Image 1 (cartoon, rainbow, N blue to C red):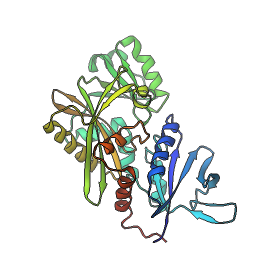
Image 2 (image 1 turned 120 degrees about the horizontal axis):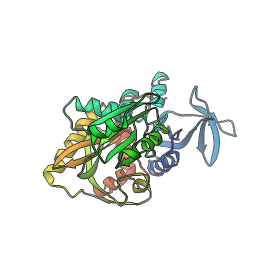
Image 3 (image 1 turned 90 degrees about the vertical axis):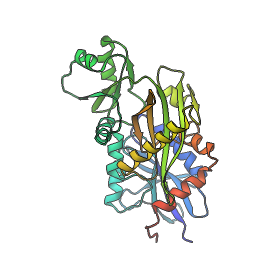
Image 4 (image 1 turned 30 degrees about the vertical axis):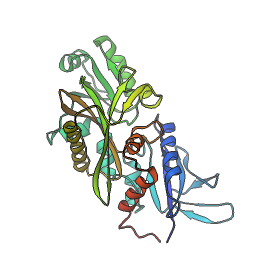
Length: 330
């Protein structure tokens, strides 16, 4: 059996560089070695760097290879992009790999970019009758009327970078006086900002993936943040309760899982994704779609896998098997 050299791409150019590295390390530690020879590839502004047998090597961005100290050439056969934000979660690397015919284990460039942009994704989904929060889009450099935004959406409201996968730059705003600062902080993370009406309800999230068995939804998790909302501290520093399975009815659980699968299929996604919801009076509203959800020890999807007693290695093996079934490795 041919061993497949898997480059697990991590790092990137966003504020969530460290979280990406944590996620990639968990994946790396659990991939079966019978079929795959995995290693990390750090993506930095100055280049790509593979960590192979505890040594660092610069990777060619032309043919995706690097040379060991003993002269052995290692070529990446399969890329697994686990970069939160730019240039992974937004589909930039996927587009480059598509152009270069490099197989990868991810949603393609189009679905990655569409799901990454909060405004465009929600507008796309609402066109199919899926409930999303009312929102206003702001473009960097354009004038905007904070009073009109507040009057349209009401308070509190959320301000988020629309074209950033980061948990940074998100604010929950209670007054018109605080809105300009929140918008300024969001623009520090991206070129577009979305202001969203607040949805009061129960926050749940559901993972979904594609394997030979088809598209499968994972258990729902209920999120109860200790902070004012599910911000960076709640996500990554343990400042939240994450209850699995979510404390919602069986009927509502099935509805959320079915809706998660529908969103995944509408966006033509592959591999793993996660859809976040706010349930208002038993009606699910999509908050966000994640094509590269966190996979660190503190992250949500590993908790879902634990609930159904599916080992992480087995989980990724199923995905790899499906995503590479038509790929001929030399």
